[in-house]
Image (cartoon, rainbow over all chains, first blue to last red; front, side, top):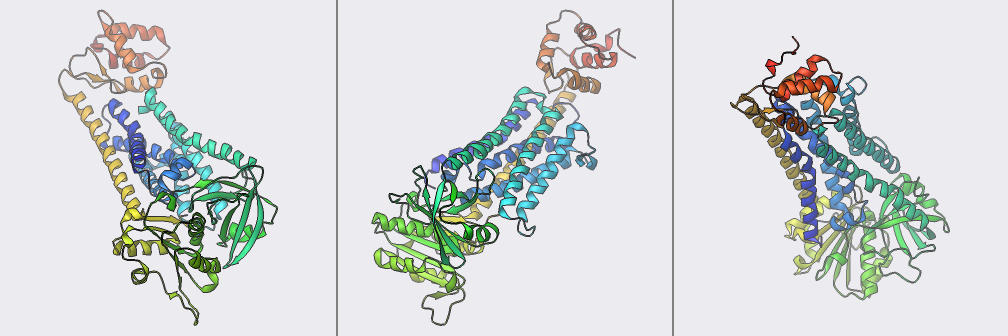
Length: 438
Length: 130
């Protein structure tokens, strides 16, 4: 995170803004005498829960400025954890404010002023369940994204209706305006994203130049901008990619796999592994000449943002794609700083870009360490998993001055984080990007 | 950044928010207690704004609060009413009660509840409903 002061400032502003409605409520509390402590606590939890809910959209990494300040990995986890916090606060609000009258949570029979709140409550439960159990529920990513967006809008709208209709503390115009302001803080960026960003994508199409089979159930789409100059990016960043009309088709976050030093044609490559549904069904059928839509770049996962003596790149599976972009960019720039690339996968057939990476070890200051879980008999690389011993064998003496980038499945990332901590690599030098958060 | 650090940050923030909510409830309760127990304290009108000029501690009428919230707050802030009442010469309760009788079509019980809520000495209002 390069802009530390900016990141701290915006985080502090987030906390203050979340608490602002409660701060004003304290000034006018109590609204009536004789209200119990638990009832007031329930109201307090509600005043925190609503800003927490409506601020969630700001944390999903769809806003470029926020995404580039904190990085997608941090944002997605924070979004997830604060979503759970919001759910707990809402449950607390419902339990305490209803004072044991469980029937008030029935959205069909509760009084009008509580009905909207009851709807928001159950929809929040639904959004939590579908997010935590997307895979067991067999929801494909595209359907889940659409459902998530619709539920989020309904929760924000019903929540506001409940707050206004309840006319407790919010009979005060200032407090009511604050809560409406929080609704708008969700609605305006969401609408801007849904319509303006998608319209811009539609007006700036890309053409598929090639759709290469890379082996390992992976394909590389080579794209070229049509009638525009595309966009510049930093190696390691990602873009949202849509293989159909951006207004009606699902979008997928995919890392750029090619060099950030663009050629005259300004082509960009994306390597995509078959992980089911879209990546296995739609991507292999994308024909050269067809249109694709991009929204990017996003993210802060880039060596351009982290100065260091050298770089250690740790990739698991398709997590190799941002690393490839970093390595190719360094080659194009004539960057002579040392790079050690650990690339782990299940078996030799799963490795992609292997020949190219091997060739690059001769053309630049790159050490390639291939690690297979199941290695063939004639395998000359490493076998097993990336662990402390393996890292020690390849890291140079001054390894704590290097920058560490890792991308791969969550289990591998958790383990590598522990290994790097055991080696006393400073936390500030470890940068991560996960692709299976949901 | 390690996702464990993010988790710790999120947990700390959640605990902090919970403490603030507890402080809010505690503050509301303390304020409530001070309004209903202190001698010569002002009475809390809907919204917690003290109604000026009252003598002694009297719990405001539940009917008054309910009626005020039901009928008045859409157009009138508590301060408006308190300010208006404090400017009335003589018997403020009668002034407010008389105004309410002309102002709307609310039942007498409700008018009396509001008058009792905002003006001192309302028990003396001759027109008070039984």
